[in-house]
Image (cartoon, rainbow, N blue to C red; front, side, top):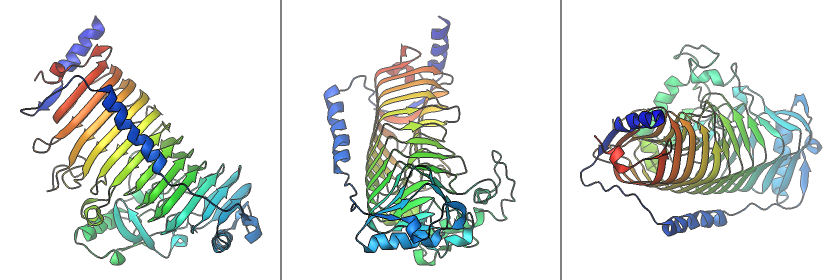
Length: 479
């Protein structure tokens, strides 16, 4: 009785704005749901695989020494070039600890780390010059080379049982973020930090400054991604463990046919997103573990004017059988989402941590905009999370622009959440509501705070329970 009384209080104090003419449904077709998920099978089958000749190029043959002292930059370069010009194969990194500067992959090369091999990047920014074309927080620029980088290559891979150590810590790379109350460093936010360059870069993009003139490497303090493939086709990242990244860990940009499989991402620095496919088509992320300082998986498509300039969505993505621990979000769409997102599927995942802030999140605003549609989640078990389902049109700049987001056709089924502050935290715009938010067979076992549901049109609830009590339409429209 006490439990039901608490739930009644929670439900009766929901913050809800329902539009005139809104239709709230309480049933959906199981047949229709199954048909929808046939598209996930199609995505899996459509991702073109990498294929490499059965020939190995041992790093030690090219001067590699795994003594944690020798600089292996030239050895990696020479082995990759030999492999590439021979028609492809594996560049094998044997057991040992290999210090290196940037590694640039070429077509038909599989960089393979054997068990107990560690590739450790030297944390000296000058080694990641000259500048290369990259994308930083959704904006193209000439910046520091990502630690592992491939540009306009085909059939490339990083595989194996070894460890990739980005070398970042509280003394190197991470302090460039600026003062952070949660971090161990204390830096003047205007001195030796990213803030001035970040602001100028975004202003350059809004002013349509040519990308070749956006020079933001030495002296700009914009940290590089650890592993970035840019405008590549057929990319495989498999088996490796990635730690201590300067910035985002895995960042495919404008790529086709990307597979991230069996990877462990464990890095807790600032902006340490696990895997951020951006403006890519046909992406499979499966059997991975994410324990990160920012979003576990974030699907992106460019920021503001620069995202609209390239106008390339993130699309046809399947996330399957992954585990999310620490992070700002488990599956996140945004915030750099101006190019849009569509045909996104997530299934059979597990999430839980006192430091996991949201399970499923869409973040945008009227500056970012973006068409976000056909988002599908099923069979996800969440232990502890701060907020379960979050769709927020007021992220960062908030309602300060002229590009209203279009978010529609969001489908979540068979979601179980043990403990959360909010089950639902949904905030659209009155003039641009979220259209088609469908929940089916979802259970939120312990919820601390009232639901927030503002400006949703066509909300469907079917077998949705909070603390074992059905969540009904009247509970959300009582105000």
